[in-house]
Length: 164
Ligand code: HEC
Image (tube, rainbow, N blue to C red; front, side):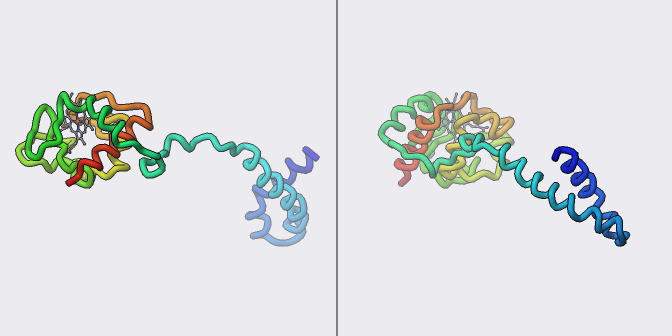
């Protein structure tokens, strides 16, 4: 069995060459090659456990609680307020959901933030706030991020709920 497989694999690897030449050598290769193809299909099927969904989680897939998110916003208040035109250490977060990055008048952004080309949709905020410097290298926002997905989703839902 094992030997057959190896022969088949070798035949498969050279199949292109053989069939280009045609003739008896090509015919001989055809049978073991079919066997090798079966083995090759089965092998990855065994090696494919569902192992990586959490990393790609999106805001839209979360159940959120905006009232709980208002409490999480306490982490932002030392630098941000939600009032229009009021910039502190960070820019006003008035209507931040849906806003293009770096667009608050009178706030002195870093080049990284200003030139990011990002729009602060709920999904983008959800990703950014997990690891701001990882998402936007060079940002001057000195905040390590909120690692808990539920807390972060609640916060984003709260920001969305403040939209006027
Ligand atoms: C230590 C101060 C500080 C804290 C705490 C902080 N930020 Fe910031 N934030 C900033 C600064 C400074 C900037 C401007 C970044 C730049 O220009 O690179 C910023 C930028 C932002 C931006 C981009 C705004 C825009 O107009 O492009 C968003 C969104 C944001 N912060 C959200 C938050 C949220 C939500 C929290 C709480 C979880 C938070 N920040 C906590 C200082 C802070």
